[in-house]
Amino acid sequence: MVQFKKEEKEKTDFRDRLATIDESGKRVWVYAKKPKGQLTFWRNIVGFVLMIFFFTAPFIRIHGEPLLLLNFIDREIVLLGVRFWPQDFHLFFLAMISLMVFIILFTVTFGRLWCGWACPQTVFMELIFRRLEYWIEGDAYHQKQLDKQPWKAGRIFRKTIKHILFFGISFIIGNYFLMYIIGSGSWEKLVTESPSEHIAGLSSMLVFSGVFYFIFSWFREQVCTIVCPYGRLQGVLLDRNSIVISYDYKRGEPRGTFFKGEDRAKAGKGSCINCTQCVQVCPTGIDIRNGTQLECINCACCIDACNGMMDATNQPRGLIRYASEKTIAEGTRLKFNIRTIAYSAVLIILLGVFTFSITARKPIEATILRAPGMLYQEPEPGKISNLYNIKLVNKTNQDLPIELKAIDPQGEIKVIGNDITVKKQSVGESVFFLILDKEKVVSDKNPVHFDIYSNGKLIEEIKSTFVGPNKP
Ligand code: SF4
Ligand code: SF4
Image (tube, rainbow, N blue to C red; front, side, top):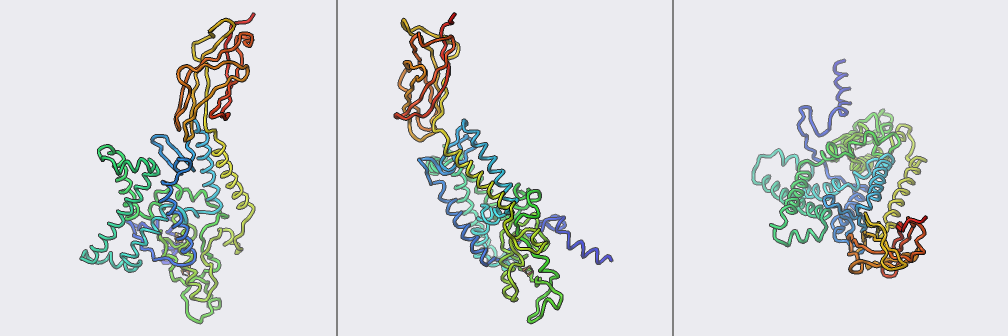
C-alpha cells in the first residue's frame, strides 16, 4: 500500500514542482538532445526568416521613418513607418487593446504557437546559442560528461570559447535591441562619437548585453517557466479546445518496452515504447506524457522525436501531435470547429481595424482658438476682426507650408509675422487675424469655418467662432 502511494505520488508530483527544480529547490540543468525532424526543419526556416527581419528592420525606412521604433522614454513610437504622436494616443491605445485581444484569442485557439515558433527567446536560444553549444560541447550526452569533468585544459578551453561567443552574440543582440529603442541613426552616433557624450546610451548597451548573456548562457528556459507573464497566463487562457502539443494517451498507454516482432496489441501495450526520446529533446525538461504543462513552450521537438521512434518501430506517426485535449479524449481528429473559425475571423478583423486606423490617420492636426481675453477689433471702418491662435502638428516627413482660408463667411486672413510653415515631425504655432465685413457679423457670436491648405491641397477643416458687437 505504501509502495503504491509512493508510485502514485511520483506519477503526479510533476504538478507540484517545476521539472527544472529539484526537491531541495536547486536548479536541474536541462541537457536537451539535438532535435531533428520535419517540424524542427520548418521551425528553423521560420526562425531564420524572423532573425533576418530582426537584424534588418532597424535599417528599413518607410517614407523616411523607421519600420519600428519603441522609444517609450522620449515618447517616440513608430509602428510600420507611422509615427504616433501624443495626439494619436487613442490609436496607440486601440493598437494595444487589439494586441491584447489578439493574444488572448490566438492563445485560446492556437495555444502557445507563438512561444515555440516565433518568440525571440526561443528563436535565439534554439537557433543560435544551443547550436553553438552543440558545436562546441557536443550533444546532450557529451555536454553532461563535460560538466562532470574536473576543470582541466579541455573543459576550460571549450567553456571559454563558448562563453566568449555567447557574450559576443549577446552584445550584438543587445545593440540591435537598443536600435529598436533609440533608432539606428542615434545608435550610429553612439558608436562613432566620443563615449563621454553618450554615457547613458553606452551603459544601456552594456546592460542589455549583460542581460542577454545571463539569459542565454544561464537563465534559459526559466524565462519561459518562471518570468514570462504570457507563459504564466496559459493556465487561464487554454481550455479543452485549444490546440496544443498533446500526447495521445489513449493510443500510447499502457506504455511498454519495444521488442522486435512483438504484437503490441496482443501484449496489452500501447504505442508508447517508453524510450523517453520526447523527454530527452525537451528544452524545458518536461515529460509531455504527463499532459499539457505550464512549462511546455510548444516547440514541437517531442513530436519530431516521437515520430522518429514511431517510424523506427513501424507504427503510425502522431502519438505526440498538435491536438486539443478534447480531440484526444474523444479519439477524434483535429479539425477547425466553429469556435476556431470565429476566433480567427475576429483576429483578422482586429488586424484590419488596426491597419485601417493607422493608414487613415490624418497627416496633420490643427486647432484654431480665439486669443484668450480678446474681444473684437475694428481695424478700419466697416470691418471687424478677431485674433486667433493656430497650433499645427505636422506628422509627415516634409516641411509643410500652410495657407489659411476663411470659407464661411468669407473674409481676409492676416498672419502676424512670417508665413506659416510647419517643420516635419514637429509642432508649429502662429497667430492671425480674421477680418470680416461688418454686415457679415450678424450676432455677438458667429460661427466661422476655416479651411487649411498645404501645397494647394485641403488638409484640414476647422470650425470656430467670431465675436462681434452685441446686436439689439
Ligand atoms: S513538451 Fe514537447 S513541445 Fe513542450 S517544450 Fe517539451 S519538447 Fe517542446
Ligand atoms: S518518444 Fe514517443 S514512444 Fe518514446 S517515450 Fe515519448 S511518447 Fe513514448
